[in-house]
Structure formats: C-alpha cells, structure tokens
Amino acid sequence: MPELPEVEVVRAGLAPAVTGARVAGVEVLDARSLKRHEAASGGFEALLTGERIEAAVRRGKFLWMPLAGGTALVGHLGMSGQLLLRTPDHPGDDRHARIRLHLEHPVHGELRVDFVDQRIFGSMAIDRMVPTADGEVAGFSADVTGPWARSIPSQVAHIARDPLDPAFDDAAFAAALARRATGVKRVLLDQGVASGIGNIYADEALWAVRMHGEQPGSSLGRRRVRDLLAAVREVLQKALAEGGTSFDAQYVNVNGASGYFAHSLNAYGRAGRPCPRCGTPIVREAFMNRSSHRCPRCQRLRASVRRVAAHDASARVVRVTPAATSPGSSAGGTPAPG
Ligand SMILES: [Zn+2]
Image (cartoon, rainbow, N blue to C red; front, side, top):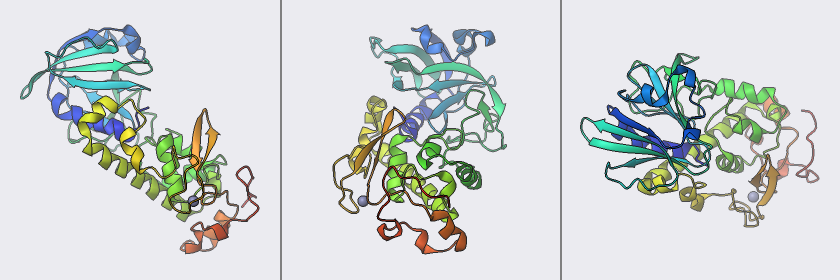
C-alpha cells in the first residue's frame, strides 16, 4: 500500500510533466475507477477534457491536480493504484490500465498519464474545491502561489495535515493524544489526527522512541509527545530521501510495501531478528487486521510516564530505559492510571 513517501515520489515525478498541461483527451477504460466521482456534477470525461492542470499537490498520501476551471482531479491510489507517465506511443496493452489522460504540455509536447490499478480500490474523480479550514496552504507542491493553493478537494478536506507539512499543528496533535485512552499507534494511524503515517512508519517511529504501540495516548507527557513527533518526522524524512534516490524504480514499485526502504527498517518486518539497539528478538503482534513489530525489551507499556513528566517538564528521566519499566510488566498488561 503506497504511503506518504511513495506518493510523494509519484507527485514529484508527475508535477513537471502535468503542470501547465492541457487535457486533450480522456479515456475511461473501466468505470469502476470512477466510484468516487459524483455523476451529479457532470461526466468525468466532459469535465476534464480541455482543462489545464495547474499543479500536482499532496496531503499525506492523497494527491490532487488543481484545474484552471476551479475544480480538481483527485487521484486516490488505494491499495495498488499507480499514475504512470508515458510517451504517447507507449503501447496501450496494460490490462490494469483504468483511465488514460492524453496531455499537451507547452514544453514537453504530448504526454500520457495512465491510471493503473490492479485491485480497483483506488479511483479518480473531479471534485469541487473548498477553502482549507485553517486558511493555510492545502498541501505540498513546488508552487503554492496559485489561486488554488489554499483550497482543497472536498473529498480530502477531512484528512489531517501530515507531520512534515509546515502548517501541521503540533499542539493540536498533542491535544488529540491527550484525549485518547486508546493506544498511541492507533492515534498515529488516524488520518483525522495526522495523515501519511502508515503501519510501517508508525512501528519505526515507536521503536525509535522506545514506546509500546498500546501505550495510552493520554498517558504520555509533553516531552514524550514531542519526542514521538520528532521520530515520526525523522522516519518520514528518511524514507522520502531514500525514495528520491531510486526515483524511476518507484514508478514500478509504488504498489509494493516500501521495498526500497526495507533495508533500513529497525522493527517492521523483522520478527525474530535482533533489535538493533539491545539484541532482543523483535516480536510480531496482531494489530487491526495487520501486524505490529516491536522490541519487547525496549518498548514496554509504562505506567508512570505522565506523572514524571508533569513534575518536571524538562526531566531527562522521561526517556524510557529498561530501568524505568517495572520488571513485571508484560505486553498485555494494563498500565495503572497515571
Ligand atoms: Zn530492543
């Protein structure tokens, strides 16, 4: 499933080719890929043909292309969707191609963008734009000066900003954690709290700060929240940097589970292999129809995080060490109320 770094690779690859291009033609090869297009607003082909694409913008793992007419082309990649840039003479024999856009670019000439989606969880849609709730730039793109910059497709408006977004609200993130008695990993994956953190990156960030995914959000002190957010950003930045180095391959690999990033994972997918920090074998546990990977020694449930943090906001003791964890605590244990 494509995550933020994979989608950013797609966005960055498409942007120079589509920005300023006119849509000369649209072929819908499989109408199931229009399931999020509201027919009431008009036919997908009719609304898109003749439009000019203004940019390629991303929020979390959602991608859209603002159109000169004021709407946007939204690409939901779903589980297996890809947006492939082709030359016009590229053979059209991909049996999973669902939608094909024929573009005319003032500099690059004729181009084709194929929406290829094996499992059809993804889709494309023309959507109306609504102003961003906070009035800030809606998402990441090279140019944020257009009239579309502070508007967002209505289908994406409920998605929170991602932690790499300059307008991400750290205080609101901390407040959302403080309100939740559920495990911190669930909160990290909640696209209404922060977008773009998938299962892999959540596990890696939790490993980096030695935090158990079931640690209640409300039990975390301010410093732990800050450390967690910093770790999330570091993991995402690292994945972005590595994705950028194997750029062309990512067009092929975008539906893989971050294969290019796998060589530098510390916890995810490493069940039974030694924790790079302490040598204890990493364990794999069921989590929301997926799995979580963690070090059973470094990442234990802790009971007293909040109390320690409340007494001394600057205390370094908040950092987790094996000594700070009661020896009797187990993976399934419930922390005492702080
Ligand atoms: Zn460890």
